[in-house]
Length: 287
Image (cartoon, rainbow, N blue to C red; front, side, top):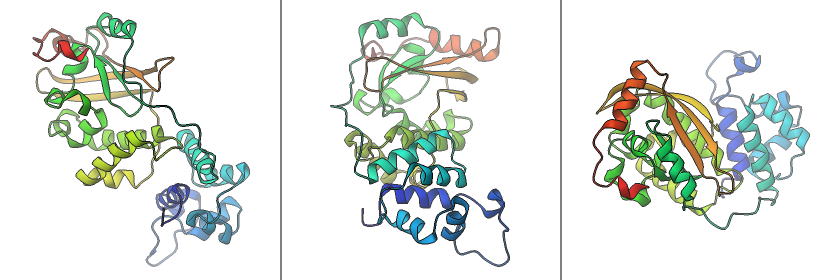
């Protein structure tokens, strides 16, 4: 924490991502040495003193009021997920983190496992709060080619996105989806960036993939419950599917994720082929 608090790092990163013209300020002439807004510009927009804002970034001021957080969020044009994150980090800086869960729940209830099978041919899986793949039906597992090359304890979908060699050809818009993936990981970190499972995952990705390290430093925050993803799958070809994400009640952050395509479309035909393909030897154990 030598370079300040997580709150300060968040503010610096988001300030660097805002151009003066984005918030109605003149761009000026000459070369700006500061990427994005200067501290004094953001302080003026938020209605706080430059000294106070500087102390927030440096971590010597750790108790901003809700009104100050709201003003900073408006000045930085934070979306809802990022604004929530700002308030969580302010609570953390003030020494008020939420109670830490006892540990990640990796056991998937039998009724949920049965539901995964009843959802076929729709690809579906259960992921942990840190995006570990806990269970999947056959099309849900086959959707990610090469994932079963890894042992079950390493099958994390964020790790797959950045570290598996097949991911960058599987996703037709890898750059955009990778940015969303890093932002989602920032969001689920919540107010506890020191949670051991997430620390291990983030540490591995920062060290092993420069793209992740670059995206992680942007401090983008985004929780996504609905989206559309397009694939170039090595077995069934091109397909785009709509994603739905549903929290599983009574678990420590488990989510049921489904991929659906409209009947009568080539995307739906590709989805059916994904389910009809011959099972691999390791698939029964993945339930």
